[in-house]
Image 1 (cartoon, rainbow, N blue to C red):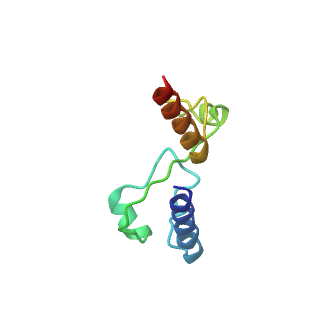
Image 2 (tube, rainbow, N blue to C red):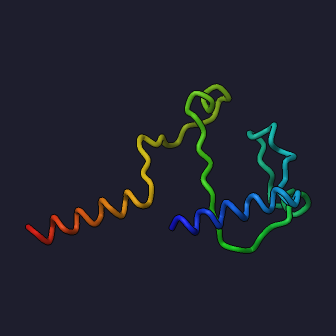
Length: 94
């Protein structure tokens, strides 16, 4: 799981270094690029990947963003695996 995250981050860094990522809309996040704009300004990779960008609540509210969800806790993949293993052992022992 961690290797996959490093690979995705590595790909993002490589695309940025090549200048393949669009920076045209960095100053106007309220107006994201549309598909026709993307085809002109960005080289798209056809690999399946995803990325979640997390923003501080105060910053999002200051720019007038709609808040759809809030993360109250996070966990590293190893921690989740450890918790699942403990849960499985506890259920097996009961």
